[in-house]
Each structure stands twice: as C-alpha cells, then as structure tokens.
Image 1 (tube, one colour):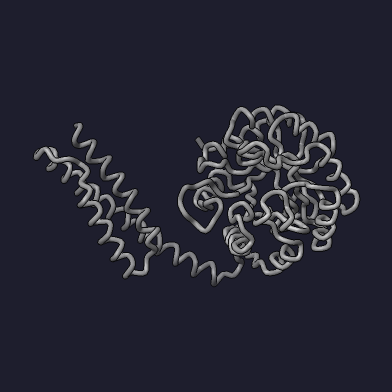
Image 2: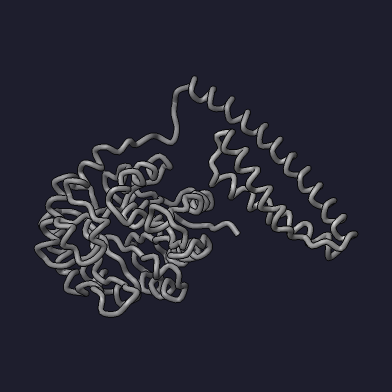
Amino acid sequence: MKPIMNITPVCNWLQDAKRPLIISGPCSAESETQMLTTAKAIAAIDKKIIFRAGIWKPRTRPNAFEGVGSKGLEWMKTVKEQTGLLTATEVANANHVEECLKNKIDILWIGARTTVNPFSVQEIADALRGTDIPVFVKNPVTPDLQLWLGALERINQAGITKLAAIHRGFHSHAITPFRNDPKWEIAIELRTHCPDLPMICDPSHICGNTELIPYVSQKAMDMDMHGLMIETHCMPKMALSDAKQQLTPLQLADLIDRLVVRKAHSENNEFKNKLELLRESINKTDEELLQVLMSRMQMVEKIGVYKKENNVTILQTNRWESLLNERLNSASMMGLSEVFVRSLYLLIHEESIRKQNEVMNF
C-alpha cells in the first residue's frame, strides 16, 4: 500500500532554507558552558544551522549517562537567546513532547530505538496533535521499511505536515567499516514511496567515527538528500557519549566548505538529449535481462521436474557452492563487484529453490 502523506515543503516553514540543511551540535547536553561554547562556534559558521543536543539519552545498559534531563531544555533556551539558532532535540514519549513544547524547542526528532515501537510512536503522535512543530523521524534500528513508514504515517496523521525522515543506518552483525550499515537501498525505497518527503542523512551514527563522516556526507549529497545531521562538540574527547563520532566546530566548517552540492536536474539540452539516449539503452538492456531471467527460471522448472521424477532433493549444496564460485570468478574478470554479484545470485538461487519447491509439491 503506497502511503499518502500531506507534506509541507521545507522552504514553506524554514526561512531561507537551503540545501544542504545542516543540523549540528553535541550528542548530549552536558553543561550550559559546553552547550553555549559549541553553539556560538556553530553560529559563527552559519546562522542557518539548526542546533541539536540530546536531553534524554536512551541507553542499552543502566548506569550509563542517560542525559541531563529537563534542565537541559533551559540551556537550549539560552542557546537560542544568545545565538539566534533554531533548536532541536529527541523525544521518546508524551512527557518529553510536552516539556519541549513548553520550553519552545523548534524541532523534534524521534530516535531509532523509538521508531521501532509503534506504541511509543503513537503516544508521541497523540501528544503532538493540535501542534504544527516540525518532526523528523529516524529509521528504526532494524532494516524494516514498513516500521519507518508506519512511524512517519502516524505522525503525519496526527496533523504534523512539517515532516522529514532521517537516515542513520541500521544495526548489522556483518563486519563493515561503519557503526551502522547505511543500507542506502532502504533510504532510496522510502524516497520512492514518498517523493515529497525530505530526507536528512545522519553520517555521525552511520560512521561511528569522524574519519568516514566526510565520505558519507558527500554520498548523501550525491543521492540528493536534503540535509545532514552531524554531531559536533567543543571538546569531543571529553564528551560523555559518542565521543568518537563528534566533530569539532572547526572540522564541521571544513566539511561544509568541501561539500559538492549537485543539482537533481540540468537545463542543458545537450545533456538532457544524451541522457535520454543512454536511458533508452538501459531500458533495452533491462528488457533483455528480464528475458534472460525468464529463460533461466524456465530451465529451473524443468530441472525441478527431472529431480522429482528421480526422487532427488531440491538443494544440492556442493553444486550451489561450485556455481557461485564460478560466477564470482567470472564477475571479477568482468570488473563487476563481488558483493553485487553475490547478492544477485543469492536472490536468483532463492527464487530457483522456490520454483523447484512448487514443482515438487504440485
């Protein structure tokens, strides 16, 4: 079911909005001095940056730093008064929403741990009803597009039209360079479902370290995302949470300065004509590819019938491992990514098993 959401464009509610929208500040509010020092350095970079800080910090284990709580909202008000920056923080329940509204926080976001729980999201949605505060929704911890969509729909159905999604990556047991696997394909699918929904990337939580943040930030821009949420701290090494992934204000300024922001479209007729020809070639190739896949699945069904007649199992592990290794070797010689070809053949194998299972049970 394709979602139908009423979204107000960012330019209609954020004065002088530009791309990329930058949301930056410490992972956690720790002290008024830390907040003001960081905020003033960020304001010196650009007054249009939105200042973020975690007031309540959900933690997996007890006795870890769980945020300073409500007194941090007073510090957020001081930041706004002294710098003019808009402020944003995370909410996880109705009480958080009410306290933020009372203290005139400008933007709220729902964290990945909360997005995964429809009961919590609905509680927040009910507390937001009747307001028009902007709300950003982070992807759930698990790679589940329906949970992400469901959270966005609940908030939207509560009357919030100033809505955006935050892509912060997904928990994975796989060994990768990232703290959270980006799984860009899920973010792309969400944008396909909701083309009017602004998408903001959170490189800090994807990377888990400062070294990869420039790379992920540029990739987000190249994928036409609307903005970036980047954790920034005046003294990152002293941070009480997520110290390894927080930039200094100076590093933030350098990152913003180096970003290449490309357009989604070009008015150059020569470019558009050549692009159209190339896309038409892709369309023809895709058609041929589908025909090849159809032929392969027809052969799979014939093999399934032959196995059934001879009382042979569907899955033959040695054959599958041999075939996969051969295809990966061929792919390497053709300059194709091993990760891509492996993923492709896993899907083909899964469909082949399904088809042969149908034949066996017919």
